[in-house]
Image 1 (cartoon, protein in one colour):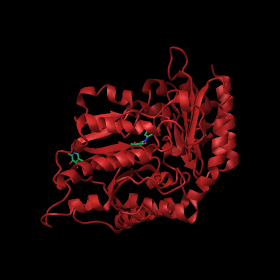
Image 2 (spheres, helix red, strand yellow; image 1 turned 90 degrees about the horizontal axis):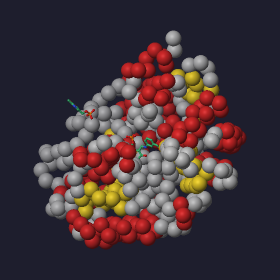
Image 3 (cartoon, protein in one colour; image 1 turned 90 degrees about the vertical axis):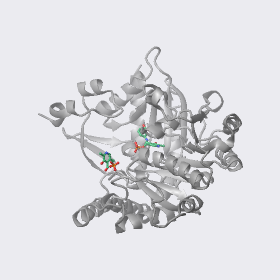
Image 4 (spheres, helix red, strand yellow; image 1 turned 135 degrees about the vertical axis):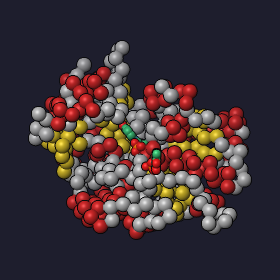
Length: 440
Ligand code: PXG
Ligand code: PLP
């Protein structure tokens, strides 16, 4: 009996329709490069690079080797009170790639933990400076900041919040999202309209008083909600308003960092520097769970006061700076450098944009969006059955076309490998086209 049929009931799957899935499971048992394999020997092309995670491809030999070596030499070492050489090295590596003035790194194990860590650092920073009244946190509608209580509260995706409405953390508000199909449908790259939506933050400063706001967190380009690139001028405007009111600006770059936008960090591609950057995913190419929060010097320095024998930040995870994860991170950074991955990513952008926008004429498609190697094809929902069309597309791609395609409701999301082969990328979109043609 295959693993699929035998064991699946015990596994409560995350963000999955469990009963529907278990009635006909899609189980992966291996991967190499740009393909997955299944237990029955099928080979599937992965259009989502894992879950935005695995930009240089699966089982990259250099990363595999680094992990194997590390696990056999130093498998675990706490970073509370002692530390390990690999975590030190990786902190240097990721901060040296960051915008000037962002020179400190706090390790976590996921994007969700990075977000909650960043929010706590922002609150602690103001308190350390004697502005402990700054407690409000501002997120954005349609934002995704993971699933822990802090990130869920500043997040703006309704189904993720609905069941926990009374338990969200207090003192949070949201600015409006930037999605505007009427004005921006089928834009290539950054939409022209909507920079003024950043002024919604001014409205919240007037409502709560800016001096009470600790931090604003946004994805510089929203990913999980279906890829919403920021309107031209929007991020600059947010930065200005934060500066005016002394608010910490957090860019949640769990997806945008490490080459997805052709640069080390999205901040560099957009030319706007936040105060804190949250990362995960591409930090280790998805091989070992790890996240990192990158922090501006002035914030770090504000904590480094008082008696030197005292802990400055009462926060940390058992696995912060895990040596095997850090070894995977270091090998990933080597691959980024040695194989010119960010440049490869940039060179694929035009083809990716053209392939996505070739769907503009399709009867089901109401919008196409792209920036860097992030893209989405939004389909109209079937009347009375939102999500059904997207779900069917995902399944048909898997069973009929040997293709893994991610859908969020009726939006197909694409996260091609940063080192995709152009012919394979083209073939994958031809297969998506056949599937969309075949569904109602
Ligand atoms: N912030 C952002 C911006 C993310 O994209 C997280 C935080 C949470 O990371 P963890 O590692 O705790 O999952 C994410 C994660 C999708 C999708 O379909 C995207 C994410 C997670 C699940 C699905 O695009 N991003
Ligand atoms: N719960 C208990 C009982 C623990 O002892 C710990 C850590 O020691 C945690 C939760 C937190 O776990 P982690 O540090 O892996 O986030």
